[in-house]
Image (cartoon, rainbow, N blue to C red; front, side):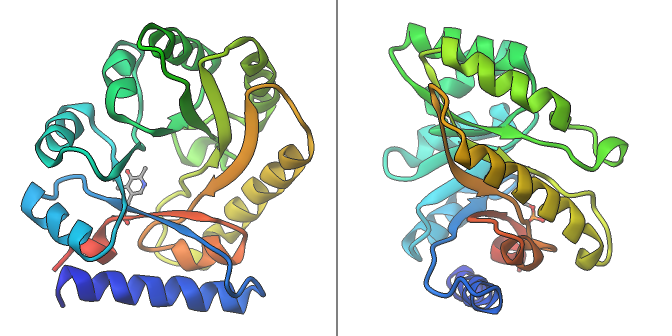
Length: 226
Ligand SMILES: *Cc1c(COP(=O)(O)O)cnc(C)c1O
C-alpha cells in the first residue's frame, strides 16, 4: 500500500467511526505524525492531501519544517521542556502537550517576544499513574483560569494520550472521561480560552476515540508504516 492508499483507508475508517457514533458528516482533523519519517515520505503524504503534520521532538521537527517550507500546519505533540519552548513557538501552530502552568507561562513569554499568539491544547491525564505525561484533572481548572492573564496564548482544547494496551476497548473510559471534561469546559467562557479541539486517538485506538467524541486524531503508523 502506498502512503496515499493508507491515507484513503484511514479517512474511510474515520468516516465509518463518525457514522457509528451518529456524527456522520462531522469533521475530524487528521494530523499525520511524521516522527522518524524522512522528508521524502512526508512530501508524499502532502501530495496525497494531508495538511497537518505532527512531531514530538524538536531536534527532528525543526530541520524538517525548514526543509519542507511553507504549506503544512505543524503540530508539536511531544513532551515539552521549558528550555525548548522558544524554538517550538517558532514553527508550531498548535502545541498539544501543555500539562503545567509554568510551561504555559513560558510559552506566553516566548510567543510575546515574537509577536505571536500561540495556540495550545492542554494535555489531560485522567488515567493517573498509567501514563506519565499530562495534567491531572485537578490541575486543569487552575491552568485554564491562569490563561486569562496570558495574552499570547490561546487554549483551544484538550489532548490525551491513552495508555498503550493491546485492546483499544479497554481505553474507552479514558477517552470518555476526557471528552466529559472537554464538554464541561466548552460551556464555560473564559478569556483566551476557546474549546474547539479534542485531540485524541492514534493508530491503535483512533476509532474508539472518535466514537467517544474526538475531533482531531494523531496518526503515524497507519499512514507511514509500509
Ligand atoms: C507517535 C505519536 C502518535 C502517533 O502514534 P501512532 O501509533 O504511530 O499512530 C500520536 N501522538 C503522540 C503524542 C505520539 O507521540
